[in-house]
Image: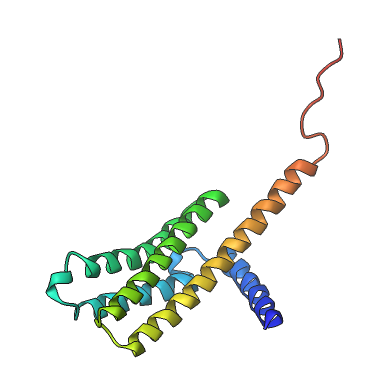
Length: 161
């Protein structure tokens, strides 16, 4: 199991490196495509929620799902690696928020177990991809820091008086 997980992570990191270097728009990112599909599904499902939830659970669930895709899009264009990580981390937080809304919606009998499982599969895939993106950015950031620290004569020497 652990070997399969590491193979998956390595494969994702390779693909992410390729995609992030080649992509010119967030719309080319697979993780954004999955997140956008999730948003559309949330909007479709919450249409059938009771009208009493229009400004409650329906609204919160929709906003959290939109936040995942929107923060991926915004983070994509950020220049600094820490800025990118910040937005991808916000997307991860919104993803966890959606996990809770799925639990609550199921417990309130607003949708079936089939819908619940479909949502979980979508969120799991988005979460894995976001984690891989963040790992790639962290690796790049740490290797960049190492280059700066190990560069010869990083600071000029003060003259001796």
